[in-house]
Amino acid sequence: MKKILVKDLKEGTVFTEPVYIDGDNLFVPAKIAIREKDISRLKSRGIKELETDGEPVETHPKHRTEESPNANPKVPESTEKTDQARTPKASATNSPPTIQENAETYHNYLELIEHMDVVCTIIASRTALGASFINDIASHLLRIVREQRNSFIGFILGAEIKGHDMAKSLVNTAILSTMIALEMKMPHHKILQLIIAALLHDVGMLRMPKEIVEKKGGLSEAELQRIQSHPVHTYKIVSKELSYPAEVSHIVLHHHERWDGEGYPRRLSGTAIDLGARIVSVADAFEAMVSKKPYRNSMIGYQAMKNILSNNLRHFDPDVIKVFIRIMGIYPIGSIILLNNGALGKVVEVQATAPLRPTIRLIVDEKGTAFKNDEGDLINLLGEKSLFISRAVDPKTIAG
Image (cartoon, rainbow, N blue to C red; front, side, top):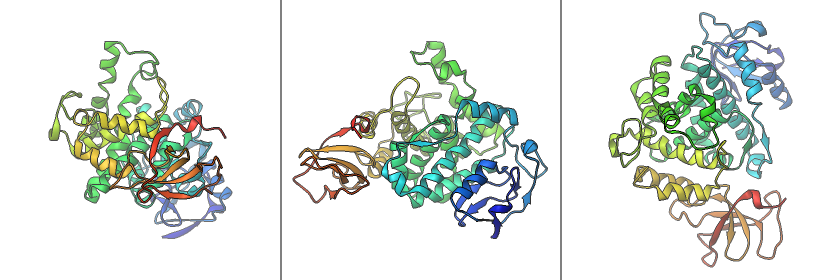
């Protein structure tokens, strides 16, 4: 790879190949214009060099969305402005300690969301989109999830991110699906197909009427039928507009099928449902429960896991659920729990063989002493037989 000096970057420049920070972390995919805010972010972090195998193609900032013979279509300027007014730049508030400890990983997480928001904007505007941008996002996501699995669980449960709601949901579902696939030791190419499908599984919703998607009250029968048609719309986008193969398009089409045959759109059951769709189904359901929606508040991770387990053998493949429990535990990483001695702790590691006995870090000990900045003791409940978790606690109820 050759070096690119940050000081030489110009707004509107695109590269023929992806550009990386430190050789591993994706800065911008191939054929996507660099924004002024991207350059400013690099400078604020003290990054002076980037790496790429590609060549720069400079375009004027005001015309950087135009197609060139070698470039994928960019977000039309009018669409980009509309989207920026609708959803502010992703930002974190009240960041938990795991985010502070893993700043670079969190930065990558935000970038995944921002890049997927570009995809969502293009699809919503019915502008042509090449698959290479999505493929780059999928490859980058797989690489960083392999390295920082536990951090991403904490981000999904604990990061308060404003804006980009659809993109965030798609990225979170893809991260959880990736974790399941890795635990199941699926082949590399199958995992990449699964990630692409998870990143796109709900994009048909972008073409649903906004007043139905964001409706806070109950849906009429006609509105419900309209919403339940979104897998078909997604399938058409993925297979026809993006030209992905059946291995990808069948996942998005079937991710709302149920293990007992009571799902939609085809009422498939059991192993007749594609394995990738069964994985995305679990990941999507969990993500939906822990994320705030227009019609309800988010659940804490423990309650979401309870709901997933209560639907086992009806909604979800029991084998996928077993893998999900090994990854997440009954009390997922980042969960706040109350011990039987009155102490409060945060789950920092789960035990695959003992999901009720995670490792926790004390927030408040049994004497009432509070700890900040992860100064509390680590307690492995697997080795502390006298201690057990009494209940999970909503982090929002903890003062300070």
